[in-house]
Amino acid sequence: MSETAAAIRAEFTKVWCVRGTFAALLLFAPISVLVAALDGWSARSALESGNSQLRDGFTPEQAGLDGVLYGQLALIAFGVLVFTNEYGSGMMRVSLLAVPRRGRLYAAKIAVVAVAATVVVVPVTVVSFLVTQLALGPYGVPISSAGVPRAVAGAGVYLTLMSVFAASTAAMARSAVLPLAILLPMVLAGTHILSVIGATKDLARYFPDQAGAEMLTVGSSDAYTGFAVLLAWTATALLCGGLRHRRWDA
Amino acid sequence: MIEVLDLTKRYGPRPVVDGLTFAVRPGAVTGFLGPNGAGKSTTMRMMLGLTRPDSGSARIGGRAYQDLRYPARHVGALLETSAPHRGLTAAHHLLWLAQSNRIPRRGVGEVLDRVGLTGAARQRVGTFSLGMGQRLGLAAALLGDPPVLVLDEPVNGLDTEGIRWLRELLRTMAAEGRTVLVSSHLMTEMSMVADHLIIIHRGRLLVDTSMPDFIRRHGRTYVRVRTPDPRGLRRELERKGASLTLAPDGALEVDGLSAAEISRSAALGGFTLEELSTHAGSLEDTFLRLVGTEGAGTHV
Image 1 (cartoon, rainbow over the protein chains, first blue to last red):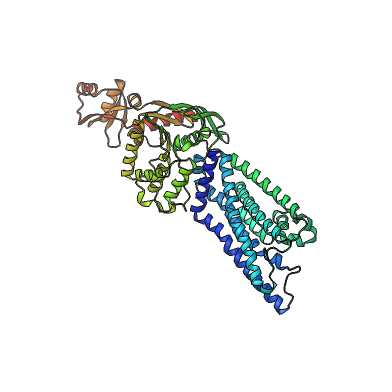
Image 2: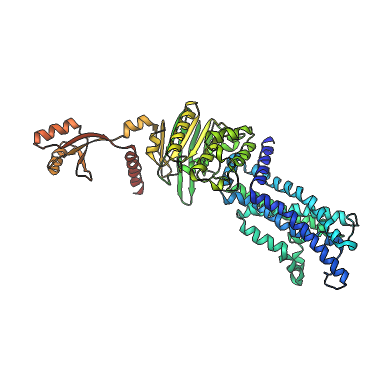
């Protein structure tokens, strides 16, 4: 166990000390908070001017979680970079010389992604929610409103799982291009488009981001189903990434 | 002690390492020699658990590399294909390495000092020259004060002073009773530092012997002769059983006769000699001849 603990400690040092990785992780905060503020301001002016530019089903409670949905792009990049930084250079071989048990190195990297993501996700999600409400002014709601605490907690779990999901897909692909080219458009627009088209609507619900989105939908009755689906995606990706990492002929 | 037992690795149908068996003993610098593509790096990667052999095994101190507890304390490794991330500073790279193997933090400063990189400790690896990168790789290998060193082409990229420093380091490590395995594709480099020699070619073992023994058995000596009538002398000496080659400058290189014997034959035949000298063939030539003939043999 202590060997694993040592490996985890070393992986944390890498995250702090490799510029790109750390920057991606930190970027989650300003993106989320900025979008949260803009979201609140624009909604407020729309409400005040009485025009109907607001989305269907707008609620101040839900708007409070829009920021982190954009911020997750940075988290996905972070999860991907933790692996592809090393495959891209000769670093993964150095890592394997230091920690030759493949499973141990993989587990240490995943653990660091999960922990580092959690550490930034929890405060940033709460702050983003509060910032949106502040920007909404008189239309803002307290964080203790019905359904909000569960949705905020759900957002935290969702974002952490997505980071881990991204990291494991990077371990599968061993290159940043493919995972980023699939994951970023997916969470931005892709499956949202699928969910609007009638034919693919039912299918889109089972994509990781759409399923996970139920977790941070205030008052959703499918939150736990969504959690289960995203968990299944993540577990599968973890397993595939682990197998691929294990078989890699360095 | 490193033991390699019947190690085999194929990429496609061609075996890159083919039933290789040898042992590397402590207290000596062992040169691991072979032309490019002979299978040296693949063998070393298998020793270090990076590549899985198709059959056979490699053990370090009686255990597979993956089974070593905190391996950096047992084996210091430098591979051509392994490199730190460009965005890390030298000190941070060594720091995470130290942490991963529970090596005290002060070790980082010590090895940086030892390889002469103290001034570049906070510099990012991406800005390093080839030689500095090589020194950092050696620092990483020395970090855990390991009893075994496995270094793949460590001379690459080092300047003259660096090469001299490395030779000194390797000799010191061996004198301290450590096991030192160093690969190279240059015989000359090996002859200056190695006590023992392992030569492989096309994945097979060609030579496994001590350096002095190798020189005694394979070092070629020949006699250079210059005469106004090379054709006549050549006929004369060939009759005595010598084999001759014509050097580019017109002199004859004679194998199989001593200078005294050649002098006697020349006097008897009435040949004038303008030059008569005994030479030891370079080990590089010997090495090239060895892998050349072996190569020709395998082709057929």
